[in-house]
Every structure is written in C-alpha cells, then in structure tokens.
Length: 321
Image (cartoon, rainbow, N blue to C red; front, side, top):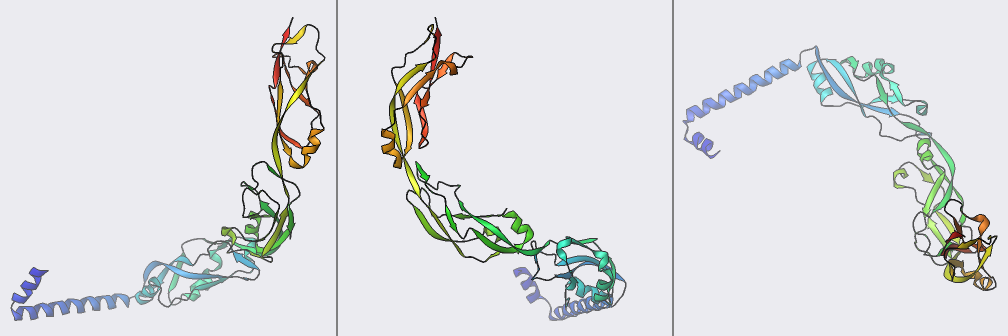
C-alpha cells in the first residue's frame, strides 16, 4: 500500500488524469451494460418466495414451525427477477386452510394459479416442491390427573406412607393441541419440592408444565394441595424358639440350631403389640427341598406390620441315618 501511494505521488499529473478518465469510462461502460442487461426479458431463475399459512388460531395451533418460503422457478424481466431474488417489496403469498388438522400437507398444484397471479408480471415456470408440509393440531381442553412425583428419594430411610396421598384438586383442565396433550398420557406429575421426608406432609405447590410444553398448553388451576402422613419403621431383632415338625426318626440336621435370629423393621405404632407375640422358627420336614436335602426356616406367626424380615441361618441341611 505504501509503495502504491508512493507510485501515485511520484506519477506525472497528466498520467494520473488519464488514469482517472479510464476508470470513469470503465465504470460507465459497466453500468451501461448492467442496465441494458436488466432491461431485457426472458431471464429464468429460482427464488425463495415468502408464504404465510392462514388458519383459525382460536380452534387450531401449529405444533411445529410453519414453512415461511417456497422455492419457485420464474421467468421475466431482469429488473423484476432482481427484485424477486433480493426479496424487495415482496409481500408473502397467503395460503388459507380451513381445517388444517385433517392433513399435514398441501399440494402446490392447488395454489399454482393464484401464486402465478400474485407474482405477475413475472411468469411462474414451476413450483420446485410438489407439497408444502405443516403440522397444525386442533385445540381441545382435557382433564388431566395430578400425581405426586415420587420417583426420587421422597421419604427418609425406613419411613413409609401411613395414609393415602390427598390431592386437591385431583384433576386439572389443560387446553392445547391434541398431539401435545397426548404426550402427557393423562398425567401431570408434580414435584413435592422435598426429599427424605420424615414427618407428616401438607403443602400447597405451584402447578407447572414441563418446559417442552409451556409454549403450547395452558392450565385453569395454578396450584395443588398435597397432604399425607408418614410412619417410621424401627430396626429390631429377636431370638427365636426352634420347633421341628414331621421329622422321621432316621433324619436329623447336619448342624443343630443353637440359635436362629430374626431381624426386621417394625411399624413404630406396633412396638407394644410385638411384645405380646411369641415367635417360633419352624423346621417342617414336609416342606424340605428334595433336590439338595435342605429345609428352610419358616417364621410363625407373620404379622403384617413387620417388613424386611431376615433369618440367620435361613436353611439347614438334612442328614439321613
């Protein structure tokens, strides 16, 4: 650049003037050629022409982005084609669909005549695609069941539900396009906002839609009341009395049971009731496993308020004399 400036500054003034004249002549010739070319007819090109799909937005909703342009091949004057190519003063071609939920496409042959009139005086040679695809669903209102989201660690260790989960309201009306509503599968799960709950629960929580659905769905209710009780199960153990039944005289145990321990979880409300129960570890020969000559320990009785019952040992091997 510095060398060019130096060359120009050192050039003869007459030569500089001649160079300017040449440059102006080239510019004028190029401009004349371009204007002359644009004034000619019978040019053909492919352009993206703007379109707008019109439908009743009270009754229907687009669930995917609608096409905004269609490729068309046109023929005409250079100036007209230039305007079309650079989208100068092109109002979108309006396509009205009365019941768009019945099909998801429109044949371009159906709009060819009206589109040709729209782009006049440019001539429509062809529409590149034979269909215009869209996805517009009917808008409906449905009742959706509200459920607590209990997939995470909702309750603390060794805690159980002591009552049914009361939900008020139990259902919510949600309005939106049918295909989006179907994805909910009739259920709206609500996060309780807590984990490892260890006391009775009663909260009013906001109703929110999954992020992917918020642009499509609306709800009548804004909150829901969840209420339930919990109970703790306590860890415990007992030494059991061993009772052998139906054993023949020639059958004994390989290892005599000195002790059989029972480990369990018990509903905290049933601790006093447990104290009154006499448990037995029953070894019933009639229930033996004939394939491996073993007999399993069975506990009697089996109260429903015990959980996770485990025995040590659980199985004894039989010996035949």
